[in-house]
Length: 239
Image (cartoon, rainbow, N blue to C red):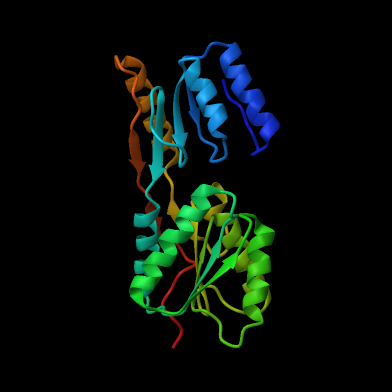
């Protein structure tokens, strides 16, 4: 069975009810917003559950963590080797734990580099990226590289920069995260951190199968790694 919650509490509750009423054996919860009460409800009905970037392992419940630390290092290292030293990070919404985890990872990497950086708030949408780019254009000194909390944000940033007569990556390099389908169709094609969806799907059901086959039904933590996909939105820093 497939349910789309759209991050709505009522839709989440309805999805949990439907899983229980239809007596599913296991559930892969790929949304990053779900109350602990809903997770406990699934587990109390002995439904093996795997969560993405949330919760802690317990009986019938396992967790998959995206390796945002490695991903942040990959992005910053790529830009650093291209000569970039002034960074801006357009973060995702504060109420989404994965967005905050990635934000913390990026900030830690930039701090270790001891390089100037600025953090702007975004909403994981194109208009949020556009709004952040408009703020950047008001600054006296532009960053040479913009890291974004997701690909839609990056596309919004690029659109505004290009509209203002700036070249991407001639004047500013831009990096996203997700590698959505439209990332390679953007102009310029977007450099991004790929979260392997097919691999994530396979891992989810391998974890669920392992839980169901075990005697104790005890969950565990698993890691899904990112991969930097270099395209045309990043280039050497402008002299």
